[in-house]
Image 1: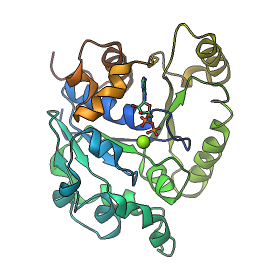
Image 2 (image 1 turned 180 degrees about the vertical axis):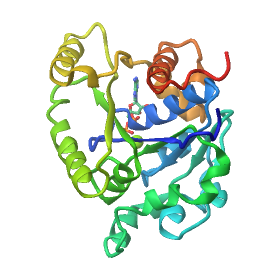
Image 3 (image 1 turned 30 degrees about the vertical axis):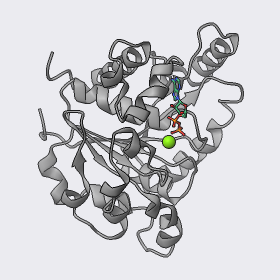
Length: 268
Ligand code: ADP
Ligand code: MG
């Protein structure tokens, strides 16, 4: 039920760009909202792709995630509804690109997002899930996401060397556990842009499952053109083409995540 337990805060992180973080942030959020959950997507990438993909105009981003973490802005002035029922967003703009430098000198530099999300003003929203779409780096912004989060979801592009890139992220996760957030879990690794006809995809999947075992989600996200088209219409893939393989795969991922938490669908 809404608001009876604290939101599950999940950072979507991988320091590589173009691996499907934003696509996963938008469509997994929308799929959980479709199940009846209340979801907040925090856009923490200065590029603001999640915000654009969900139809927040540049002109409507004067107040953004930057203000939430650096200016102590009230969530009420930052968080806004999207066209997806039950899905809210804290949009990003280019202001965030200087945030890394601005927060270095702050005493609570790693805790700014955690502090922001724990404000009392957040409670009335009754979010079940808060996703954080991270920038493609292991910068202070990403560290803020890892400190604020209960768990990390890692999109892994089904391509050569995908696994090699993971060790750096895992190292950062270990450091954050030691310094600031001992309970940080790994929500799971999701294979993205998977091509069944491509031997390489199958090899990456085999390697990932052998190396990471249960951490790899059963659901695999296929390479699907609908997923790349949807953001230019400012729609989630569920709205853009709800019966596409891309839409079905993100619904399955949502079920996998909600199922583990014992937070079943709230509506049929
Ligand atoms: P990141 O946020 O990690 O940089 P994106 O989610 O923006 O990655 O994805 C990079 C590009 O790949 C985007 O153009 C996106 O539309 C496309 N893309 C992502 N996932 C898929 C997929 N499963 N099938 C097809 N295109 C995809
Ligand atoms: Mg992105």
